[in-house]
Length: 83
Image (cartoon, rainbow, N blue to C red; front, side):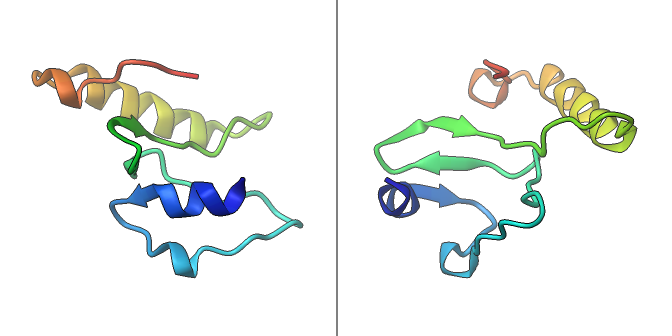
């Protein structure tokens, strides 16, 4: 499944051949980075780092991202779902 995901995901700023797996620390994601899938290019995923207790920096980053998206006037640039 992971290999299918790697072949189907396209990231605006990431060379997938350079993506590694680290089992000892959390991933380094940026909610500002757009990820799309070749099977559905209209679905845009923004992956955040998740939330940790007392991590206000990441919470502020997510709030800034949501505020930024809320100001978008073009429908395709607006935030449509938060999971």
